[in-house]
Length: 272
Image (cartoon, rainbow, N blue to C red; front, side, top):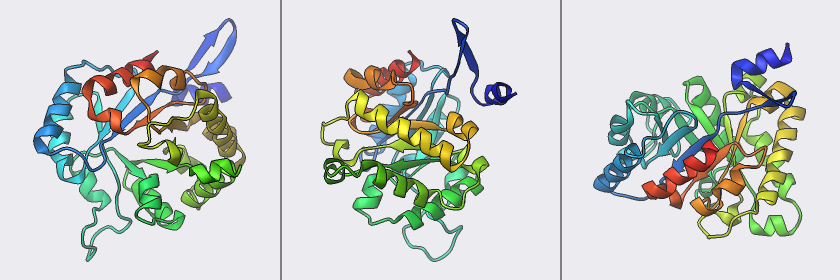
């Protein structure tokens, strides 16, 4: 009966009599604070011309000011709209902030939360991120919850202690059912925008540990269901090796998502 429940989530494949649970890959592009209106439109049109299919979930996350126009261009495509952050209040006197209902109103499906730049540059705490995760789930948005260590933390041997703290703090108070609706992105801070990248073995080790953490914190079904993306200088040249790892279910792509050819190549790598 366990396999029957998993089948509802993502399907069971049989190879030589051995069952393997297969999670649908998910590749999301985080455009960060880049592009103008014309550039965003050109990038989207370039992606649409690639003829991407639905064997991989794909999303683009433009800056807020371009989200509505980008959303309208991809509305009838396989590309989903994501945004880069959201506030945890529904409405009110919160100058400069964006609510979940505003994102939903323009067709947004995904929201990146706890990105290292929000944590380390904007000073967001696990408590703030946790509030955002809860309201996103309540609003029907899919949170992409980011965790990751700095170079100093990796070199000091505290990678998993840091990630476990971020994981538990960001997901505090969520039910197993709620956790089953999120996406986790492991993004080593030292590999974001630096040109450095974790080796497939380094990335897989952390993804495997995150999978175990999901099981011990919740249950085996949630552990098997939740998709864990890798983020950190993912490019066409390294995507296939990273995405071939058993616990890496996709990518949260930064700089390479700003070029239609590069982003489409990463999606193609995920398809294989």
